[in-house]
Length: 193
Image (cartoon, rainbow, N blue to C red; front, side, top):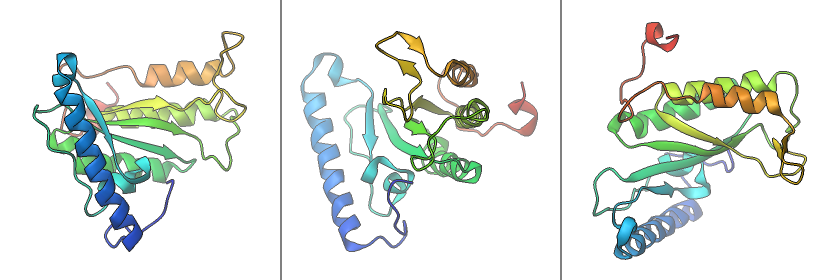
């Protein structure tokens, strides 16, 4: 989690920030829609305070009012090495949004920034993360900053620096659903199919 506060009892500065973000999100959406062309019905990512799970579930956060149905996607980030934390994050976003037909994307994720060295377990850990998110209807995009930390691709050399991780997360993220995202969590028997 990027910032810490009590979601159900946020401090005044967080409440002020959330109100401001709601206004910015609404104004941005209005400008995009008014541009016409493909913008009149394109999908739009909407983030909350610090683009975190807490930021989109905090009391007061609202998705902007759209002129087009079903075109907003909740956007959030998460960095952790805790299995419990990523399961909590996915479950929270699923319960608040996906289960109600509102799509979500984990648009930035990776290992904990305070302990960000990849190791022999990283491919399994990160692919488990992606698989769990996808099973719950959430798409993922890993963060690669082309620096020592979080570097999967050597852009200058046009080669993988962490090929095992890249292959594992791509395989874990392969779609298992057809059509619109499901709003029903898979049962234990369907998770292994």
